[in-house]
Length: 256
Image 1 (cartoon, rainbow, N blue to C red):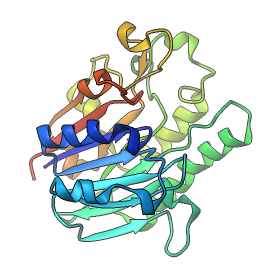
Image 2 (cartoon, rainbow, N blue to C red):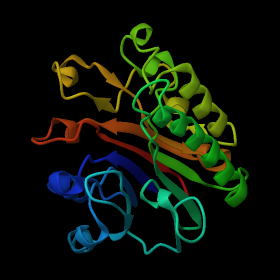
Image 3 (cartoon, rainbow, N blue to C red):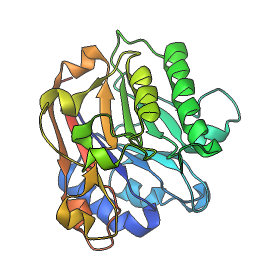
């Protein structure tokens, strides 16, 4: 089972990049973040033509999550709670082959000391509560997406200069770790404990060419599934494509 995640930074701008990647790689699941499109304008028909079911929630110009699956989802949950939920543009649970796949776009946080940063820290707390209430760490589950945290110094260029960045500040890293400790394993780091590999590079100062990046897109799994992860990697081709997102695709394969 091949599962991938990609912050597209506007699905309409990157549609060809996404469809090309789907055709070349045929993952079972591709989770997208920052789709930046209202539901009525989401290109579900294009993905249907590619052979994929699409579940999504979005809004104009900001946020938005979508999960593309070869198999029809067994169930779909939008947001962090039943009923109306303002977070449904940031979190989407799709069950495939009995495995809940939690697609998340964690708030970026803007700046240390702001309300937006406090909201980011609280969002991780709420996400842990979501896991506690809805899931079981002893059963297979995948949590993935743009999680907007570089967990360790190896995950960001010049970490000594990034300590006051909202994606590497110690409070954000601790909030992330507390959520992970519910029962998740970072499958990329499990398979590649010492590898420097980023998933995001700014558009400025030739960051991609200089490999001045961040590993902030992640695929995590509960232990029963993490132990069956046979491959995990980052595909740089989408970041090299004309009109690329500032993120690229991360993927993992599980023997299920």
